[in-house]
Image (cartoon, rainbow, N blue to C red; front, top):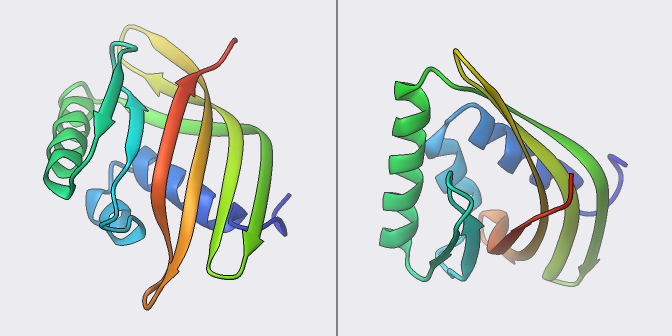
Length: 133
């Protein structure tokens, strides 16, 4: 699986989230926004601007830190395609959130659109949906 297009970049995104490292995550995301995510309550969130993204991520990371949450992600299935300066990855993964009194596992399916910029490959689109357990 490591040799597939965008596999390393996809893992780096998940690792930055798991580490609650907003600066690292910011560096991997392009300013061309079109993101659909799942909030901590399982609701769909649509993000259209850098300011919305930054607020959303900062609030989520702060809540995770306040709860002393430990995050991890396990990729179950991965596919990636690159054509010239664009590509995509599709993955099924389980995000695990360990809290003092609970462990929550969120199975997800994600499509990421990647584009090549002067700084390298950046996430240009993210669409996350809940997946069956």
